Length: 157
Length: 110
Image 1 (cartoon, rainbow over the protein chains, first blue to last red):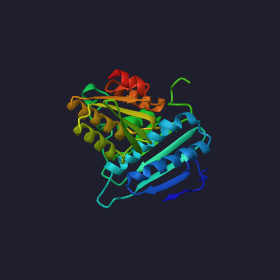
Image 2: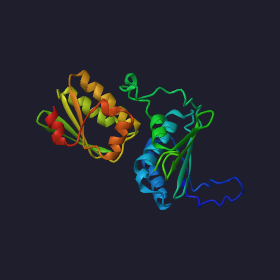
Image 3: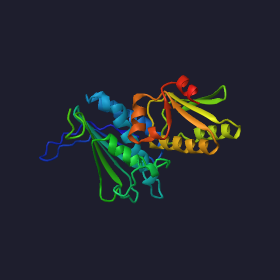
Image 4: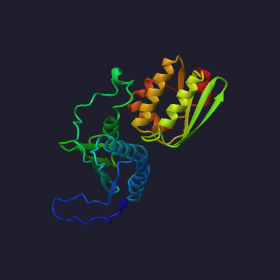
């Protein structure tokens, strides 16, 4: 079930990102669509420009959730933890599972001709293409993704 | 996601309603396999009712495309919205599939 925390007031020096939204999901992929819509609705309510919510945010988060649910599992069906913060300029989503992790740097490029006909292998690729900042922890079982209203840093308007 | 299956001439037309994402792919796969077994060799998947797709949805289309080709058949995709087109272009799957703007254009291309 979701826990809609009120926006946190983190004014301690250096603590800039609050958590506006928290959820723990069982590893059940049928729960993904409803969570995506809630995240997109909160982003809209925060005033984030609509243009990149429908595709970039929705599919980026969808990929991260399905990866966590399908690859980030231990024997006990541990829940997936989701945290997000929203402003008109920036959306940050953090997704963590309790699996053994993986090396996101060790993935083949799915756009290469020899990989194009593979049914899988596009999830992390899409996250990196659709979100502006993507960072995995060292183990590879926690992901931080950011979408910026102005687009990726360094890109001309 | 739901879908409707019709036959238009010798083409099996599958109209997808909803999002083709992780968790709801098996029925679509089975529908195509059943139609192949029944002798259909031309397939058109119409995405007019689909808002978005994820990588597993793309994956099931790749698998279906391969299966259909193995049976000597052809597959067309039609009515992809801008978001779907973006995903196919990002993943370079627009080079693997024959994508048509409309059902009519897809039908004419067989």
